[in-house]
Image 1: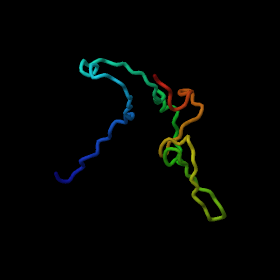
Image 2: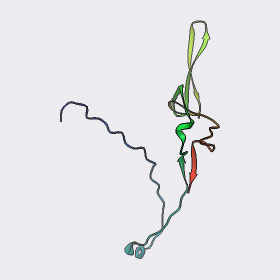
Image 3: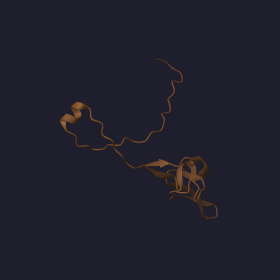
Image 4: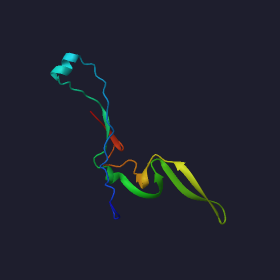
Length: 108
């Protein structure tokens, strides 16, 4: 035990599990039959980094915060919904050539 920088390991980001309900017989289970399944999922655009830009107003996914002057010497912090904000300090560039269909693509 003790002191020290027992660091947190950063887990690799993974997609959530997919549950596919299947009807199988006891015989199929016993014999270990192989059943092929197809499903459609959303995947990140391959070159998604090319379509990101820094934007300090983005405070998290879908949240934009900016300062608005309401009178001389008085400012107000305004929070708005902005789907282009994908993370703190990061904004998605619209109409990016690298990802013409947006951030995600459908994959079978």
